[in-house]
Image 1 (spheres, helix red, strand yellow):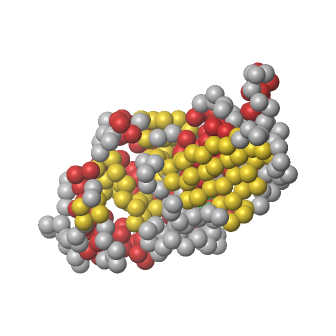
Image 2 (spheres, protein in one colour):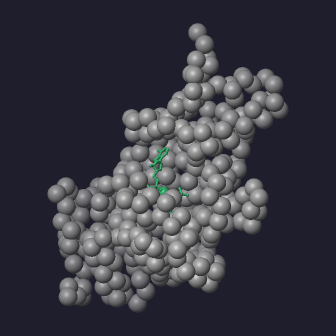
Image 3 (cartoon, protein in one colour):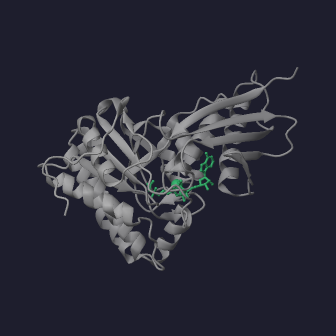
Length: 354
Ligand code: ADP
Ligand code: DP6
Ligand code: CO
């Protein structure tokens, strides 16, 4: 019997607090600004990917959610697979006792346990899982930082899903090869275990404008983007890193909400404009704004990626109250549970419904 070379791994999604939107180099996927996100826990939204290398495979192939995706020469899937094969070839050259599998074609099969291409960062978990599965298949010694450089070539946001906790993607300055445009862990999940994310699926359909084409159009047409990348993001990155280090939720929340707002303003400033949020998204913003008015410091932070779905960051003691509030306005056909206990719709004391 011949040997089986196969590995399966999962990677979680990450939801940005400081949004990546715009590339200065399309083929290397180098961003116009640094970004920062929170990686969600593995047991929630994730991509699970199996990679197998075999001498009988005649081409590289990939199936996403059971349907074959064509691997275009020079495309992102092709780049990631080629880079990983190159690392394996280097590894085999340095370790002659290892089996020679770098030249085999690979078959890759991936499933997302949440809506794909709907603005819930499937490209982030998807390409992180792909690169991670190949690194396991090839038993590579490379660090998450090294792998983040390759995941970035699949989808920019994917570089941040190689780390857990709070993660920055430093834009870097090496425009020739992009060697310093990679992810860095700002703090592990254990630094602030009370931080939770409430995912509100407003619409699970595929978005009309992909992140890739949307940001392309923004870079070409939006003057507001230039202001954002030069005047706003650099200080915000420094401030949010400090807020995380000191566990100041109110400041973390304000920066997160302001950055989501500015990202969607930049989308609107794109010509023709791009609308990722809808009426329900905007209603959730109004609800969270009124909720935050009730306390001295914000207790909830909404953020929206390139889609209508809300992610609400909050600390554990407040999550149930926020879920009750959202359910009051948006009753669900199915029961919602937090920590094994059903969430009943309710308004917090003092909440003004007007
Ligand atoms: P999202 O908001 O979900 O990240 P994008 O427009 O950024 O949407 O990217 C969606 C694309 O990412 C999909 O059309 C597919 O090409 C790719 N993708 C999503 N999930 C996976 C996966 N598990 N493995 C490989 N590629 C994936
Ligand atoms: C709004 O990483 O999906 O979610 O690099 O073209 O694949 P490509 O784009 P992608 O863009 C993510 C945009 C965002 C913000 C973020 O995750 O930082
Ligand atoms: Co994406």
